[in-house]
Amino acid sequence: MQIGIFTVGDVTTDPTTGRTPTEYERIKATVEIAKKAEEVGLDVFATGEHHNPPFIASNPTATLAYIGAQTENIILSTATTLITTTDPVLIAEDYAKIQHLTDGRVDLMMGRGNTGPVYPWFGKDIRQGINLAIENYALLRRLWTEDVVDWEGRFRTPLQGYTSTPRPLDGVAPFVWHGSIRSPEIAEQAAYYGDGYFHNHIFWPASHAAQMVNLYRERFEHYGHGRADQAIVGLGGQIFMNRSSQEAVRRFRPYFDNAPVYGHGPSLEEFTEHTPLTVGSPQQVLERTLSFREYAGHYQRQLFLVDHAGLPLKTVLEQLDLLGEILPEMRKGFAEGRPADIPDAPTHASLVAAAGGAKDGTVHAEDTMTGTTDRDAETEAVLVEGAEA
Picture 1 (spheres, rainbow, N blue to C red):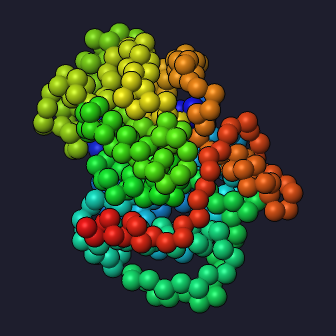
Picture 2: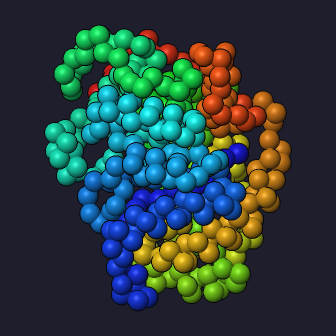
């Protein structure tokens, strides 16, 4: 089980002080948060991708490469890589380069993005969002798995005899998750390829998460990648902790009430009742998180959002210390009752092993995690037809 954190990189005024951090401060804070995540023993740090204010999460590749140079073990990921508005040729180059720089400590979470103005900024039409996600990802896979690519599609200029460089480290591409809150098409795409499916699991009730995860699991089995319960699933979540649950609520309430995304709507109590947001003691966070298996089944990756809504860096680092304290029990809890044939989240080393070893005989990362099967796409026609239906 991989446990970690993700950030959306929002620049939000602290409602308790009225101070808004500068972009410089927020960018530097992101690096400190990632380093702290590794220090307390977390497995994954992921950054989102936003190209509009009030966010500093543009150019995630620069952020991850910089963090990679200052860490040794933590997996670096995205939340999300915009497969719709970013050229797949650029994605192929950028993340293969980060693979080499970090000895394979990188994977990606693909997503459409739902901020309307961003699409025309990159010359795209949001009405083609699903079709862009399908076509661009099909091309990306070919760029990583084929040394020479001839390709022609609907949304970019053709490629003739093109080789993406650098080639993926050890001959295996970074593992891909497909992230979504409410899009069944993205769950279908993840299942079709046998990739991972990450349900953001922030704004919606447990019943919605269960529906989306179950859809992905059923389609994963339908496409022949394994049993439904062996599908690769990740969940998001939001937490805020204090030794005293009452004090946790008192401290977090002003941030919740004024948050740009969910503030001025349902009360904190209503939101925590109906969504995965957990505000309370470390023990309450532990128990609530382990309960996600009741409707999602045994899954492989749990990421928490801890630095949003204007929380100051000092508070975020305190949250990570508390998370580190309950991490051993959380790992133990997730391991209880887990069947031996449920795969772990794929890593670079496990993917290399599944592929029969590195092309040059040297594996640049070592671990004991078990990979999942990969499937070369014969055609994306099934997905295109589903998206256009």
